[in-house]
Length: 263
Image (cartoon, rainbow, N blue to C red; front, side, top):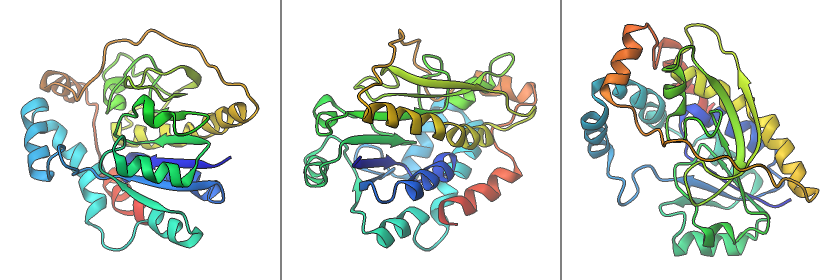
């Protein structure tokens, strides 16, 4: 199976993405790395100000540790080294549905698109460039917690509700047919950052099974009515997490964020 793998290099998914890419290096015909500061998304300062206005200061350590800190360590990332070692074409994705990406996909001729911690939405025309469409691994029990930071919303529930889902890619965020999912009991006191890393890794066997089913002509999945979208959290929700002693980030997350994307 020819695979086009799409990801955003950041701490929450880096270990899972690296494990998947190492296992399927011979099958990956295109590696798409999202540009977090692409046109329209704004630079780091503009994005930080937008998050501050929307979610307040409590979210900033989570974003800095998981998304900004890994980019500060010098040298090529593990994925870039893997791509160079195996001769995998690498594309920095500024617009996943733009003409440059369409041309890259046509040249690569993938059978399947795989989204693993990727932050852009695929249009129907882009999904149609792969005969088997696309799969996404999402660290929540869909249809619950659709959105960019599901482990924060799962941590806010009483008790916390963690899980991972593999579903078909669709033009609506996290709303494609569900192929497999698994609930996980994570240790008491787990941070949202550590939960995200654990859930992405726990989802890899589900992703492998879903790919095998597609290759065998199965994998229609089941549709579930999408629940309300969970955006970046409001300040009141983050204050509530703090009052209950539930943390978004801890010292171990700093170590993981600094080392994992480039180890």
